[in-house]
Amino acid sequence: MFKGLPFAKALKDKGHEVEVLTGFPNYPEGRLYSSYRLHLYQKEIMDGITVHRTFLYPSHNQSGFLRIVNYFSFGISSFLIVPFIHKKYDIIYVYNLVTLGPTAFLLRLFSGAKVLYDVQDLWPESVHNSGLLSSELLNKLLQYWCNWVYKRADHIVVLSPGFMENIIIRGINEKNITVIYNWNDSTQNSENLIGKNIVEQFNIPNKFNIVFAGTMGIYQGMDTILDAAQILGHEYENIQFVLIGGGTEVERLKERALQMNLNNVKFLGRIPKDIINSVLKLADVFLVHLIRHPMFSITIPSKTQAYMSSGKPILMGVEGNAADLIQEANCGLIFEPENVKSLIDAISRLYILEKSLFLEMGERGLRFYQKHLCFEKGVERFIKLFQNYFNS
Image 1 (tube, rainbow, N blue to C red):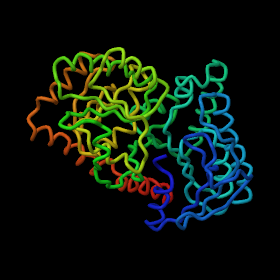
Image 2: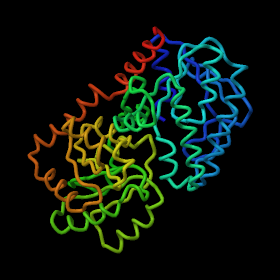
Image 3: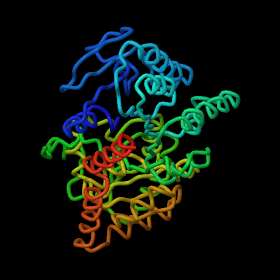
């Protein structure tokens, strides 16, 4: 979660009083962290910030029903605890979950505060597309619920212009919506040295490394990458694809790569957070790819900002807002999703690019990130938005 404790601490450091209402930590594995036990309510102080935790059912697996239980159990318990913890608030900032609407509105009733919703996933579209909810009736009910919540919020923050257009279509006044791009997760920005053991694990001395890091599921369309690797293997000895992460498709992709006899594709699995930056430093180019889908044209994969902050060129295989961002920053090349020839052409252009131009491309991404997308800039925009509502 990009806007967790670091965001709260940044607001506190700017002189604001901050309290957090959340559940018991269980993301991303869906298991309660070892240092916690489930209670109806628990209060703790983290880095000087008061954190109220309420009961939820821990679950982040592929069961749509259990995920819904997770979301609604937190929504219900947080709603019930509001009368016991409320005080005079100015701004109620809600991160993403529409199941927290009643909690936020009850807090507003008690305190007269403004409710700002930060929309990171478009429901019910994202829930339906993930396969977690297949019932048309339930989708319609969820659509009604989402619109009910969004229309009653005082302001909505979205992560892309496409999200803004979607919210407007739902009947929300454009004046009540602000685009604030996500920033790179600053908790993973440790400066680790590239150890010899990491280089040996990669087995990539003197290679041109195209790195994909993240989930490998059906929506990432990784077969396009394998097909491109097979063709490029006959033309360029020095180009190598490094695939980092897990996902439902990994084992199948490994088997297919073996059948295709791909010596230029390396699967590294999940990398611990304490060395991920060291591993990513070995990349020459970063790769982003999603299959063609209307939802993906209005989103920006979170890895985009991380790649831009690395100062390396980016190959963007996502249509719409993500491609627009890369073109605006002029920090990489765009290729058509699920188009092997388009990907090969983009890779070839980068590979033969003069070194000074290649390095400048990556540096443009870093400068753009620092000027427009970094943590500090994002916090500034949120504070300005909060102050506008506080003073209104």
